[in-house]
Length: 477
Image (tube, rainbow, N blue to C red):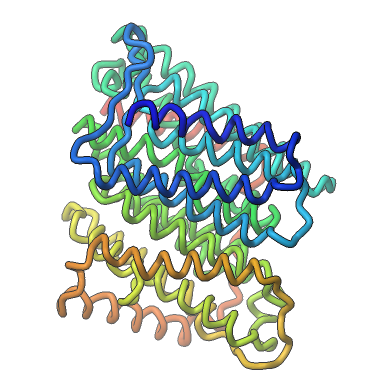
């Protein structure tokens, strides 16, 4: 298994650069890499104990592959395969598929890193590949959005790198376990980098513009898997070091409420989905023990919704209320919206039930409010008009992507089939019902537009400084 792991890590990088030699089979190679990752993730679920690889013993450079990694890797595999299907007949060049494969491989690497220095390398490669994909259209707007993303990401990673050095100075090792014995400032600096990278709390307000202005398949990759590379190390550290768990949970609740607070008032489809990405990342952090399953469900749902948003007749929800959506597309949109709202028969239900069961008492009210806000937000999609009017032109690859992702949402029920008990079913249905009622009575007619000033570039850097002060206060307290 160790040899397979090393080959699996290196394969995307080798194949990615080989695409330039074989441009006519670029889509097939990208799809093959995604299938290989799905196979590797499946193997992790069958392994009785975690696989641990020591790369550099003296420095604590370690890879750990276990069931937690398996959930995240499987998410990456399914989302990447769906994006390849979506782009199959879109005329994307070999350059696009090269960056997609490199991004896929570096995301996989981040999901098995167990030390801060190899994670740093993986996150930096992810930044470069994501930057090139965001800038792929080569318009002035896309280049600016990509540069903005890269600058914010790299600034955050400078703080992270200083924190990693402090961990090594205290332990002579970069291993995650060393964070427990490192000085408090190391924890604050590393957490700042990961919070920004993962789009967590106010540090993640770079995310709505980046995800909403990127091309549809790139938005699906960013929201489905890329932001989870910042979330995964936080979950891993919370599980390893008991003292870190409360801090991660606090940010989970705050992030869930912040994202959904923006989402319920947002009238742009892609911006609403981007804010909801922030909110759903909070659910992953709120219960680290079961964060892997929630990450899988969220990745499938959010990539589905972003791909569907790309074929709707408008991004404006007000306009969509007067433009009937083609019925098959509406069915796919409704299924994904039901799943993320926690409706039974789709894995979003089991993920929410499992998360709520693993909350601490002080988290329950906040996370239930976030769940209610989720139901309000996605009522905007569920109750859009549909019919035969204004049929959207979609390519066959779109439906292959939908079958894969929606099929995954149904199949993933098997990870927690114990959720299907009457008390577990009643509460989510009541939450969804209250959310729909609130939507019709309050939010459907709302014209409130929240300010975007805090999303401006210069304010993002300022917020990063404030977050660092907050983190210093939290860890010293």
